Length: 225
Image 1: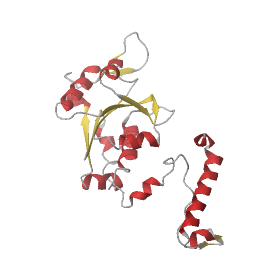
Image 2: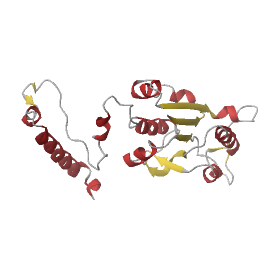
Image 3: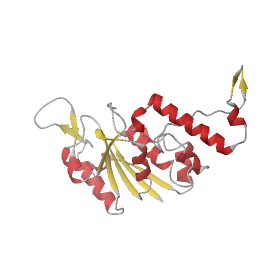
Image 4: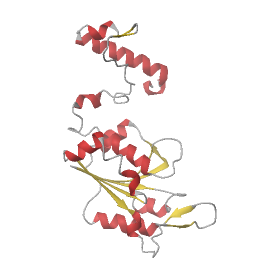
């Protein structure tokens, strides 16, 4: 079983993403254990504050080192983490290969930032990997953490009812997926390509590869380099 722990100041934001569909089934099957920890529970401040003004001045608050250190070290007493991941806009951009690699790990700890960011010493002392889900800024790391977890968990063997489905997703082989169709075969004169109705599996696979290649050349030629 994979264990994924997430540290956040807004645990309620992560309730829904993991309580439905594939994420719910993965937990029900016992393939992954997702736990969300409230950072404020590890603050020694009487008001449970987890942020402070930044040294040197400037706009925006900074998440304090002590609550994170307390929480991380508490969790490390029971689990040895393969990766401690900080979700941040200046991290490496999340790609399918990253999700593939992380899906093979046993224990992951995710840190969700807020405000102006987290004290740099947290990154230096505890974080082993930093990931961004794109070149933009969110209000916090929770949505990014949900995206990362979804991308990892869905490819764990046994999570999807048809495991081959994940292997044919976009980016798995550096190609975008080919077009897909379902019934009816003719919708208002718009027909499914004849090859897909032929029953000739080798020719269907050849067509799909050619379509994927053309689709990738048109939309993401950088993937072919």
